[in-house]
Length: 442
Image (cartoon, rainbow, N blue to C red; front, side):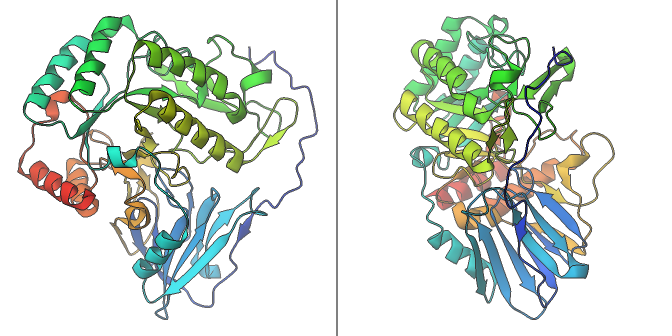
C-alpha cells in the first residue's frame, strides 16, 4: 500500500523560526536540573529531547560556577535541552511556535527557589480529575482474564485497598497495538463482554476509578478508514511518518494527523461509554512523545502547539463524556498537557552509560561527574499533575532494577503502581512508601 502511494504536491515550505535558544553565558554551569528529575553534575556536551522519558519538563535549572542559579522555562513544547560546555551554551530550544511563545528566565540563589517562582507564576491549573486521582495506588494491569481478575481485585478491595485506580491495558478487539483504531468490542480471548462489565462495575461500586488503554498515535493500514491522504502525517520530504512496528505481528503503523484524531476517538468512546461505562481513561503515548508538527498529503503544515491543544481538548472531552471528573492518564508524563490531563505513569530514568542492546534508550546517555534522581517535575507540578509509579517494574529491562523503583519512590513519593493484582500485597517498604505518599498527597 505504501509503495503505491504518491503525494499530490511537491513544495513543502513554511516560513518560520526553526530554532530559538539563549546565547552563550559568561560562566560555565556546574549542575543541570531537568526532566522527571535528574541533577547532572559537571556534564559533558549532550542533547535531551522533549518527551516523557527524557526532558519531561518545559523548565530546567542551572547552577553556575560563580554561585548564581537560574531556571529557564518555555510555554510551548520545547524541542530539546542542549548543553555544550565548551561554548558555555546551556539552553532549552524551541521552534515553529516560537514567534508567539514566552521564554522565561528566573535567577535566584538556588534552583529550588527559582522553581517555586515558576510554579507560582506559570498560570497552569489542575485539570478536573486531578483531585480524584491524587494519592491513589495504581493497579497497572497488562494481562489476565476479565473474570479471574475481578475476583483478585475483589480480594484486594476486601483488604481495604480501595484508595486505588485500575488501568487495564490489553483488551482491544484485535489484540494489543494491532489494527488500531478499531478497538471495540473487547477481545473475547480474555472473557465475555458481561465479564468486563462486571469487572468495571466492581471497581465503580468500590470507589475505584477504572480506565481502559487506548491509542491515537498509531494508525494501522489494515484498519477500517485507513487513508494516507486523509489521516496520516507526512514528513517535509513527502513521505508518510512511520509509527510503531508491532514486530510480533509484523505490522507497521503510521502516525496520525492530530487534526484527524477526533472522529475515530469519539466513535470509540461513545461505544465504550454506552456499553462499558469506565470511570477513567488512558491514552498511550500522548505524554511520552513531544506534541509533533507535521505536514498533510496536500502540503498543509500543523505546529506542535496545534497537536498539543488538540490532544488536550480531547482529554477534556473524554472526561466530560464519562462524567464525574473521570481521571485521564497517559504514558510517561511530560508537562505540556497540564490543565487538560490529570496524570501519567512515571518513567523516571537514570543518567549513566547505556547498556548494550535495543533497550539502551532506558538510560539517559550523558557523561558527567555524577548524577542523582530528584523530584524536579513535582517541584513545580505536584498539586496539578499526578505522576504514579516510579518506572518500569521488570527487572529484566536494562537500566532499571527493583532498587531503582524503591529509591525513586522514596525520593519522589509518587502514588504506588503495581503491574499485577497478585503483587499488591505490601511489604514493609511498600507500606512506609504508601504512608509517605498519603501524607504528601494530603
